[in-house]
Image 1 (tube, rainbow, N blue to C red):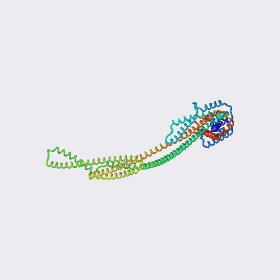
Image 2: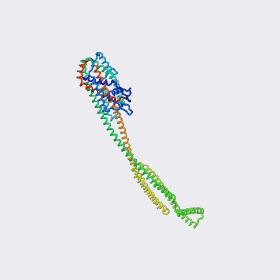
Image 3: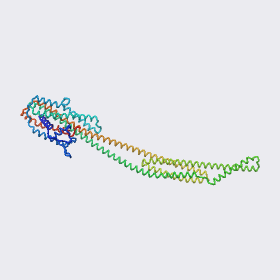
Image 4: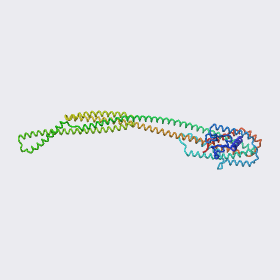
Length: 580
């Protein structure tokens, strides 16, 4: 009974495929397209329809996806068509074709249902291949978040898909031939008793087919769950990408804030650059001080006394030579004069010694002053270099401003000390003529204070430079860490975007591939037709056929539904998953 029902459904399917109706002209379906005949025949039967474009032409849009609503409409149209044609079929007429003719036709059908190697198409093999592809799709659904599909896997799947397409194309052509043979075979059934025996066997095989269809439906359910898992993974990845975008926006805002603070710091540095004029004033004051020291002269009375002493020494030396010449004529008076002369010479020697000591003291004083002036110049040069270094470092961080202010305060204090030193040095110069010892004491005190001020300045500048260097190291470390974090976030965002794109691409590709792999269902139906055809050997009488039809009525309905399911899968594959 089930076999008769399946036979009738396949007969209707063959009529659908081979029927000739008014031609339909789709603009986007060429006559040399591999699915042209199927599209035109199903359109002529009213199962498919096109879309009217704005230009008034009819389009099929074969690359558009098939929705569940469209599937429901096409299946309903197919059911209506089969029910209508089944009601019109009535009884199966007798045929005068002999058993030998039937066997020859069965052999031809068997030949039509063999592959290129001469073997019958194995349903179990197709089912195993479909299961393997389902496992690959499931593995893709689980692993796309961690790894990407290799090119070799994609090429292998593509080759398998192309092989299935070739099998489907060959099977479609053979089904067309099978439909014509079934139409002829309907008129040649002669032996009802033999047919009934083999129909029972066909019923058992239809039960097996039902089990296979159930397994296929379970596989579809598994695919749906895998697709749902993929959609969940895609949503999760999208959420993570949005979070990374928010973090990157926060980092961008922080960078903008840092840029504003750096600009403010530069303005402050430019303002402080004007304070360098104070340092230049200090240099000018020191230069003036050096000029005053260079122009220091002894008092006029001291110079006059020194000149008088020099004249007296010269006179005495001249007189002493004359006395030496007349030493043989010494008199008492001369002796007294010589004694006085010796006394004068001794006094002159003392005066000369005092004058030389005074000159040495003045030379030592000038040397000490020049030495101190050189030290001051060196210190000022060091101070200028330190200030320049501080200015360069200040441009790197805002916390160095306070240290620079302290340095400027020290420079101001140094200017005050130098002013006091200048006053004391002028006082010391005024007292040189009266008391050289006091002048030396003042110079020693000046040297001590200068050294203390210089040491204090060096210690303060070194401390400030150490603080600035420490602050710069801290800032550089933080900037390096921030840069590393930004690079890490960017790398993770790029990797996530790459993985998301690869997941979406693989999802689209595997969805189409998995849908395409369901086409062997048509091949399964062809195998069942071959088995039924082998069972039709003897012709049956009209009464026997009517009795058999009544018995097979429930199974016929079930077979029609099974055939519709296979046809629906084929239509879905033709529309939603065209082969490139």
